[in-house]
Amino acid sequence: MFAPEVINNLTDAIAEQLEEKLTKKYHPTVSREEAMDLIGCSAGVFNEIRKRDDFQFVRIEGISSRYSTANLIEWINGRRK
Image (cartoon, rainbow, N blue to C red; front, side):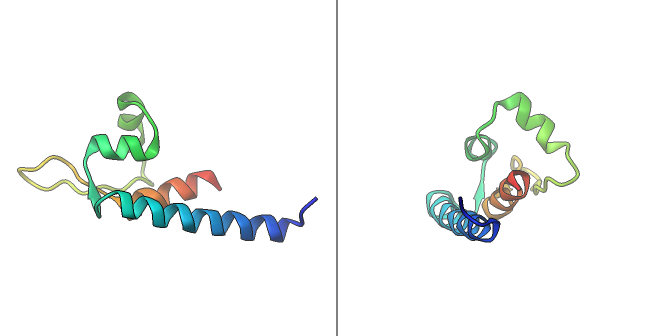
């Protein structure tokens, strides 16, 4: 069995690698559909997530909402801990 410290270090290393791969795949900001793909959820679930206080996004007038890829990844990682 692995010590908790080893497991935490492995988890952090995996999260860093995943974040690097995702930021290369997606632009700095993503559309609603891309955000749903990144999170892996349906439109209904995404609507509920958007209402959460810990979920951030930017609405640009005249343009649909955009979501920061980095913030999405941080939110996902925070939800998994």
